[in-house]
Length: 232
Image 1 (tube, one colour):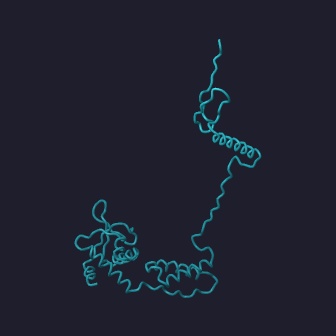
Image 2 (cartoon, rainbow, N blue to C red):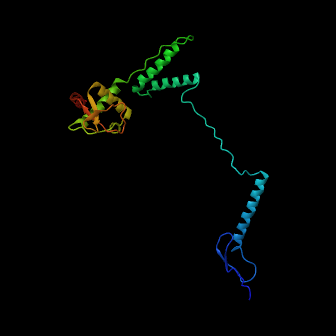
Image 3 (cartoon, helix red, strand yellow):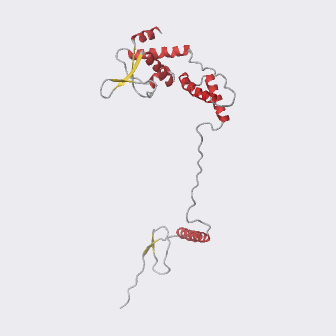
C-alpha cells in the first residue's frame, strides 16, 4: 500500500503573514515577494550585529542611571550686598509710588525691626534717621471714597443686592485692592457694614480685608453716608 504524502498548498509569508500559494513542484516559498524577503534579511542581520556588540561590551543591556541636578534658588538675598540692593529697590518703589499705601504699616514694622537690630550691634556707626513714609494723598483717597460711596449707595437703595469686590472694581475701573482698602476704611469708620447670609439663617459680618474677590456679600450704608454720596 503506498504511503500518503503531504504537500502544503498555502503557507503564511515569513514577514507580513499574508497567504502564499505554494507551487506543486519545486522549492517551497517563504516570502510572498522580494520586499518581504529583504526586510526579513535586514532584521536578521541587525539582530546579529546587536548581539555581536552586546558580547563585545559596546552596547549596554541595561540603560544608564538618570542623574538630576537640582538647584534651589534662595527666596531672599543671601549676602549683605544683595540685601542692600533689595532695600534700595524698595526705597525706589516707595518713592515712585509703585507700592500701595495700605502696605506701608507692614513695611514700617519690618524696617523698624531691621533698624532695632542694627542699633543693638556692639560696633558700627549709628544708623541714620529714617525718613517717614508718606501716607496716601488726601485728594486721591477722598476721590476713591466718593466713588465707592456713590457705587454702594446705588446698591443700598431699597433692598441691597449682593455684589463682589471684583464687580465693584470693574465698574469703577480701579484695582481690587483699592476697593478692598476703601471698603475696610468705611466699615472701620462705622458708615458701612458688609455681611453675607449664614447657612443657619441670618447674616454674618464680612471682613473686607480678607474676603475673596469673587465672594458675594451685601453692603449696607449708614443714611448719612448715602446723603454724603449724593452730595458728591
